[in-house]
Image (cartoon, rainbow, N blue to C red):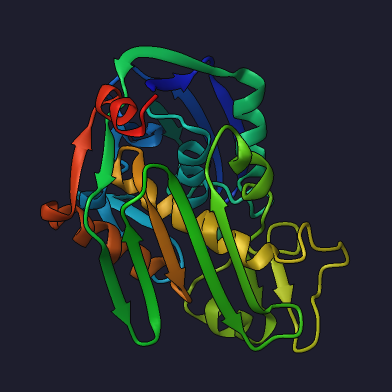
Length: 291
Ligand SMILES: [Zn+2]
């Protein structure tokens, strides 16, 4: 019911999925009410706030941009922070893309768990959905409905022997994000690799940071971390884009075949549709749930 930051600094070294650029990333504690603030330490600590107003390009990854300065592929890190309940943090980066690490949010959640969370004095404010809000776009749907807790139901349907129809509903509570969602890795299709590379994407992609699907199976010789790892990763991405709201949400999200572009459009339009939600303090939330 109170805001949280991390208890100490943590550091990661790795390569960007799309740019192939090496980067060092540090996550540091931040004061209550600050939110998630990125700093480009290679550009005089230029700050970029993780919010909807900063979202620039979302074809394959979520990019934040302000005055020509950008930071790309922020969604897995933001997902981990949102999923684990970190409200405030500074994120220092010495390049323009967050390292992809193993393609999941697990390295982030493990490191955050190791260093711990620090409870802050400021009570959390929740964005509570009071009226359903639904967007549809060429067979894809994303909606949110009133609820006293936060949950996601996600359905995907890919014509591939390892995927097919996958559907999952998760009620987010305690630390179940770390177990159920964080380990799910990015995936892509081998037949798209060449086209993506020609567009200057996935230059840092490898079997170490993505599941690469062939027509009948996958190139990786590890096994899947979950039978339905694919829908879990879509949920991981959705949480990363949902983190751009900047505060915890009470509502039931339902997604059908959605993706980054629809996720980020949804977050922006939901925030503009202020007749569909209210901001509650914990006292109001507790009174409403009768605790
Ligand atoms: Zn992803």
